[in-house]
Length: 437
Ligand code: 5AD
Ligand code: SF4
Image (cartoon, rainbow, N blue to C red):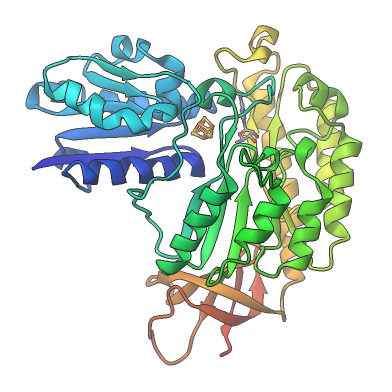
């Protein structure tokens, strides 16, 4: 029996890719084990969005430097694999397989090549062959299922490696997405998360020619599906019809992640984001005018080359103006191949750190205010689990807020159920409440 271990870094796309890889390996007769020590084959599915993420895999590999003599095989998958290619063999000579996300369907053949004695094997072509789910995909979460609707990215944000690591955009046919959604519902999942680097630029390649808003609405009408989420959106392609669909269809979660990156139009131009601050804010206005209150989250980069104190102040003012429900914020990191590489790294690390701290503290205050408004409300939660340490159930609201709650009278299993919870307390990152039905 051949055993494998897989560790995943990075975004939901990567998490879902690992589900595809695991399914493929199980189908090949491999057995998954919980630690790298027990495994004959060790896979790292990697992220290269920032330098820190990239370094993680090399520090993992470093720990096992002496192991290849002991019959272990090391494989690097994902974005670092695609970005670094055969250079990985130089940096970590005990690695013998390097494979990017566009080549996972070839994994069985690549593994055969290894077994037949090839020392170094690669799958790095970025051709447009699709790598959407197959019936083999082995999903991790019993309630929420990821469905890839579009692979790759055709934008060229000046800081971003993704177009290089995941290749050009290719959409899946609407029929294939709908079939997958129906199968998932039959298998008992109640929540679907539609995935893509830019789901808003989804274009159905079949004659039905659905746009993203239509696809979203139809997935939300699949019998048995109670919640649909989507990630991630690009403001340039985010249209009003998406908000209309959320308003019209209660299964579509009232949460939108709309990365802004900066509040300064000057910096946005440098980033090649293809929208201005004002255009971004017009999208926010559509959401604020929706009938159901839509929670909004975003991503921000501080310290992009040329970002002045005044630009940064504009980002802070944008946070205040929008009132985000959550923000993921990062220090700019120079990435290989990207257009911004030639601008250098103009803002000192220390200054980036200062801006990041100020921004995160400002946002913390905003979240305290935002969440306080939920106290007293009744919220429907999907129960995700039970926290033994606190004796609380962990729920998630449609707006994607964590709501921890107590239930008098023991622990009868609520996991996977939808329950009503009265919010009694609010913190910056979560709500707390009591079960009412
Ligand atoms: N440096 C810092 N943050 C980055 N992101 C993408 N590329 C970089 C980079 N080079 C952030 C963006 C993106 C999120 C997934 O990661 O905010 O939306
Ligand atoms: Fe990381 Fe981006 Fe690759 Fe996701 S697509 S794993 S965030 S580099």
